[in-house]
Length: 455
Image (cartoon, rainbow, N blue to C red; front, side, top):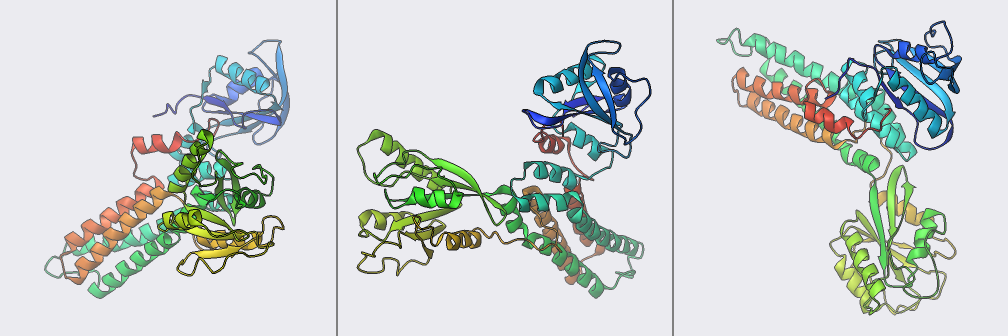
């Protein structure tokens, strides 16, 4: 997958200009390559920022920049190898020149995720923690960052290892019993074995219970605002966003295309989509806008149906209710600051949650945010329980739970230990896939390829 014997280099800070940019070197020759480019005779002191001038090549008088160089000797470094970080002025031209100078001196440009991959191979982190690094870098809400950091700190890994240790002890006792086949469950009591297996299953189920909420926080959700023209969809959109992103006029059909913005709903990144008003029209551009609105609705996790109570509830509103009857939806009765003209309540047979609001006065917007939180199951996970956010982890834990329950059923039926052991050993193997103790090169390639270069 990667050559781990050479020295790699990459820019570790985001693309673009900044006050400071960091170039990272890692590998057996990290210190010598950096030393050859720095205008100082003495070596770098471990974990001490050293001010020096960096040149384009060893012995070259042409200077690139003044930098702070910090040496992290392995194995106590991020990658487990020797690491040198060069903090320079954050110009892309300067940082690229430093990378080119390091490559001329023997370094290789790092692949995406290669620094973290080396940390995984060198035992600095397990696979759960490695995936958490990418999630932490990609986080866009404080709650996403908190959950990713908790996993990086090892909360989930610790719980999985604790379950694995319990499984190992139980397997060892059952294997010992195989030496005395005439006795049957010689080293473990059958009922205690059933209880131990049930406890393991319950612990796995406890982790799975918060999985849906964790996935919502990690992956985010798409919410589409839809309704007839001029019901106030764009005003609702702007109110939730907190800025005038969508054009609002008194002219029906102002919005012709999809307008999107990401907002934070109780820690969940929500991609909010404003759409063209749904109606029959001969305008070719508006027709395309309506088609895009329906396409967005088809893939939405939740739809906000906006109705204008200051005008009659007509056939287009009825049709919208019918079309979305099988969708997850939230009804927004807008313009409550204006007189009500509906002769009767049109939602008596509708079970969806209803929120009254006024985009003009911003009344009801907070209630709408709270309703979004409930509909998206966005409540914050408890801090005393590891929160699973990764689909891979959830799938593997579900498979492990099935194997453990199968073993429990086998014990209850008084099946021989060999069959019980096969199920429990399979469960252990699955848990080890989560932390990376057992894995394939294809899986590692898939996981680390989504990292940014420099991490």
